[in-house]
Image (cartoon, rainbow, N blue to C red; front, side, top):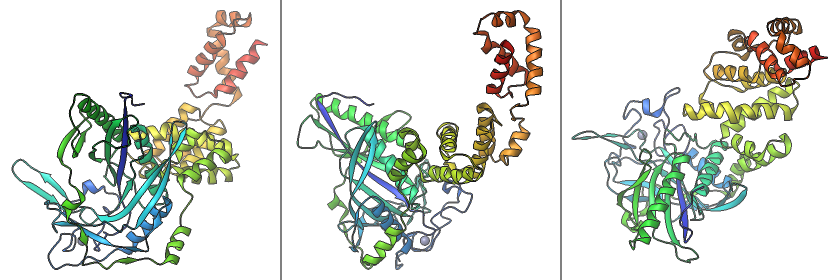
Length: 493
Ligand SMILES: [Zn+2]
């Protein structure tokens, strides 16, 4: 938990940019995604550009209908009102990665308004208001060399929604929880891939401080382009301490845009913050206003899947998961889907739903979370499938593999080594539950440690662990530990 001078109160609002998972860009037919199996960063510069997204004079934008559908879906999932008449506007500014000299965005008539998102902070629930969601195009990217710069327009015209919260958050943890909640929603409803490393889910954080109990917010600084849940909390934490120190020493916070450097864990001034009027917004003359039909909106509403918050509650009540575990497995659409697909398969194998859920969730919140973080890879990008997980749950619940063996098998499946059955075979992970083989190993251990065995027999219970350990060693760690213990205990009576 971040702490700061209790005389001060902190006010945070987030603007989240989520890249919509459409096949093509927002105003032209160029691919919006890298080809199958490639990351955006691996693709040649300017490979997916055309005169429209390269901003050639005389070209005209044409709105991608899927963008409209996805933006509406996101708005409905966040409880927004959908505007039946919305308008695109030009946001004018000059920068080399924006060849038109303006960004097509929405200004006073965004597609979605007035939503709410519920977040969990520790044990408390809190509602953060969503002020608006608007559609816009992304800009390209500048690459600065020693004495010249290069422009890559692969991202130009890639569709984004910007989700703007009200300044309702009061701590870095709340901001992190909100960013995670939005991420869980957009990935669950499938409108955004949510890959933070690729920059398709990123946020700007507006942070200000004010004396406790004050009615007026302090001057805010905006931290730009943070693409990590952890770093958004760290950046805000740093910014709070910077602003409080500044105010206490008699200084004034200036309205500006800052960048967070994660290596130094500091924010740096980038430029003074523009006001809306600096952008000379006006309605985009090349696009007609967007008119949505009520029935169409309702049809989109019907396509909404179960949302993360509902799923979380159901996992707790139906599957008996803890609130924490349910929170982790519903944190992205892909994790929740993996669990549900796994449970569908384990039910066919006759494994009780709660037992299977507990076992699969242990793997998802433990080893799979670890691998996912370590390799900065979403579970959907790994080779691990629900079939693997269901087979592994079956192997665990039927004592075919130990928990250590399960971890090895999981890693192998994650890396694409084949079926669980073949992995267990290949890595020799099968637990020895054959009593004959175990009895023989126990005999050998007792013969080697006759003195200790006599002591144990005369009442030194603590030696049981020693004998289990020694026999386990003899079987190369493959003995079923429960069975082993049982067999050794039998020898005592
Ligand atoms: Zn294009």
